[in-house]
Image 1 (cartoon, rainbow, N blue to C red):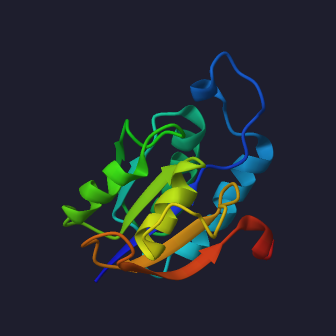
Image 2 (tube, rainbow, N blue to C red):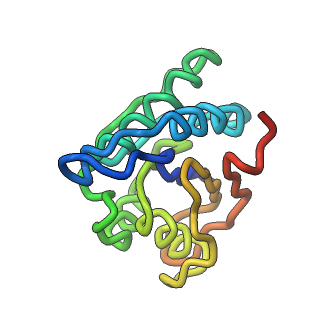
Length: 160
């Protein structure tokens, strides 16, 4: 059985030259750091991260926290997990993955739709993932709806 963490990037500033260049706000930075303890029981060994700046910054904060806790995950930038990309293509890639636990750091609507595809087998997202939130799913990706949601946490749910 494998675990996949699906994380939406932290809160970002509203404007930049392009959407891909929007950095995290101070709140987004703090919220990303706040989520690290949720990962320590079974930390990810590999992070697949969107190339957009806010996702890269979120992943860097998470990795810093994991390293401080004695872990050393590998990070890979994956170009096809941006807000406009089709999560169906990632489901196929996840079926071939032999490493784990894996963490994806991406954007809405991509992450909410992916979570729904993996756990419910359709694109009608039941959970609209908040910024810096993490969903943990477990199971084998043998098709749509084959994984179980273990937990979903958002920064507003955690004590300071």
